[in-house]
Amino acid sequence: MSFQIRPGKASDARAILDLIIELAVFEKLPNEVELTEADLLRDGFSDQPKFKTFVAEEADGTIIGMTLFYERYSTWKGKIIHLEDLMVTQQKRGVGAGKALYTAVLKYAYEQGCKRVSWEVLDWNTSAINFYKSTGANVLDGWQVVQMNEKNLVEFVGTEN
Image (cartoon, rainbow, N blue to C red):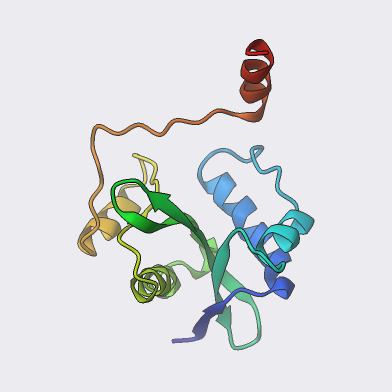
């Protein structure tokens, strides 16, 4: 392995943001990232972090992949982990970094006594879907992701007053 997996640290914030932007481009949503490096530093590397990360780092210090996840609470299961993003830069796909990052999150969840790890995957990303299935993950049919964006949130809350 020409890389190591380690917990992310504040000095990785720029590289993590670059990978988030690259993921948005891959997912055909290049203009959706509003997050800044300062947001990542405040929200992930402060006294009370809102998320955790693992990074894949080459021997020369280059970050080639990352995963970002956080704890949630399920009314059915209890403590769970939500895997928000897992990304390996395009030039380094196929070296095993993605699987190693995925494994690090699952191992962390297991060690923390979590009852489930959940995440979303785009229906056209068949290579990811096939990989997840090969590891024993279930891709749930019949569930739809629901979101309320900031504009609609403001509009809705404003009409309820």
